[in-house]
Length: 66
Image 1 (cartoon, rainbow, N blue to C red):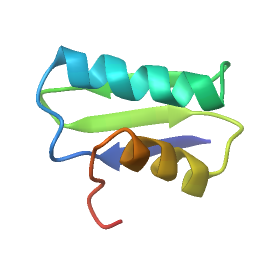
Image 2: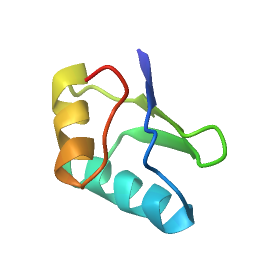
Image 3: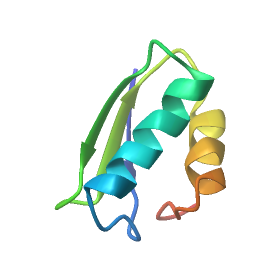
């Protein structure tokens, strides 16, 4: 299942890399697609939605509605 999250405080490619790497630490097989312009992160993963959100927040980013 693909999970699409809005990350309003993501500003650049370095942010995208940090988020992607954080998710891959938790779930190495996750498919992560980050759109910096649209400020979205799409994750295809076996991990739960909650754990993915927690990893993004722990990396220092906010998630709209979370």
